[in-house]
Image (cartoon, rainbow, N blue to C red; front, top):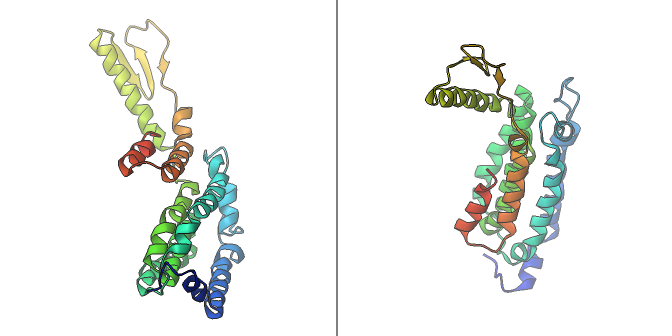
Length: 240
């Protein structure tokens, strides 16, 4: 293990073979994400093209473009800790790197761009663990895994339908408690005597639609804040 108190030790770590390994690894990693177009409606988009196109009002992920500069700032904010961390080759990093690469290959087989993009931070984290050691990987873990917050969840809007049904049932139950006879028709609450027009329980509100953006902001704020761990957890959960 290298002496973290000796700056020259960190310079020795960045040898020519190590720099060559980093550059070649970066090129190999860029190839499946930038050169292979297997995703999208016509199968003509690479991973990042699909991701950029998925940041749209239909998915409510317009905030996705903010994630990458936030990650860059997090890593910049932790740069001194990363520099001071002892550097060494740690083969345990391959236990994360290799499965993540397999996950990436499977994503092309099944045509799932979310799987490919979700594997990216795991590949980077496993590579950092292998090349620079566990302490560096621990420092970089949160900023790299933060990338997951810009990958649109499948059928996220459809999940609000369940909330819509629950709200309808509670409205019907509340009316019964106060002696108002109602019956349900889908997400409509109707009077059994026809005294009023049907009350329609609306779909997902703006609060649900902005949930992922709020989670992203609260997670970044909790990470960068100088608070105790339990306070960070409260700050993060407050978004929900």
